[in-house]
Length: 61
Image (cartoon, rainbow, N blue to C red; front, side, top):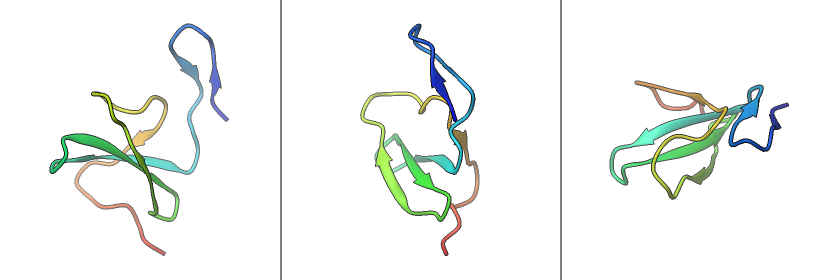
């Protein structure tokens, strides 16, 4: 489990989460392990401590 340090960063990696860039909205979308949509980051940049997927869609059950 990732832990916040209080200085704008995390130690560790969030498990069972993936992020992918959405070219239609220009924002990053977050998915769980099953490929279900979790949320979108409203500000620019990527989510912290979440693995990024490039070139493929998240797996669907």
